[in-house]
Length: 149
Length: 125
Image (cartoon, rainbow over all chains, first blue to last red; front, side, top):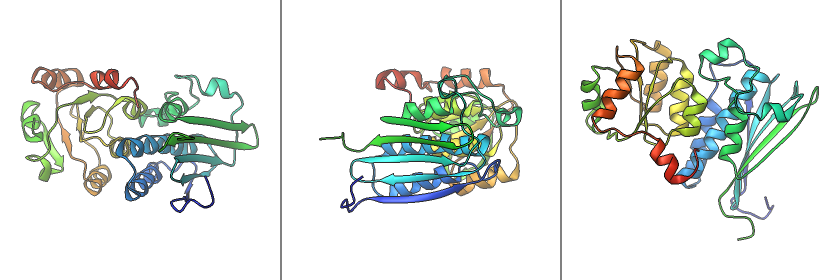
């Protein structure tokens, strides 16, 4: 993201742990902001899905955190940052079907071990930085224009 | 097929979005109880059939750009879910038919699935 990019935008949305009643509000807001920016609908959809999975992960697994939406002329970045507890085994967490979610979460239609894989599926670039006790940052980038083009 | 015809076909009550009955065209549907599958594999303007009635179903539909939701097997959502759907402009139907039969009736009437769209795009999301 370049400092000179006039379209550059960064917004933070707080997400509280275990707040299932509000879960999804941030993703709706992300979708609304991207639509208002005039971004193509397929890119908006991918970013909104990534934001929703990230938001659900924060609600279900974290001690609280935030979703950061960054947009410039080249890319949309949906970043989930939390304050813990961290992912002990990232490779295992990325495996489709692996989940530590509760039955309550499963009854809502989540917790089937698809959150992080879905975020990666929606992304052109995807990173996770985590360690136990320090917290996790997950970033999903969706390109508006291919880098270097 | 108009939403009104779909409601008649599967004997569904319309519990939100009556204003869209005659205007909303549906040609694709999917059946799922796992919202991560809905987010990953459903395409925009798809009608979702589900046995779940949580607010996350409506949120998933909004985020994924779905056309509407059919609750199967006699499930009825709570007032909060209906209010959320009305606020987001997502029509809700409810039928007593189980998932398999409701999906089968729609498929037989010409409503397609999402797999053909996923295959054409070469990706799920």
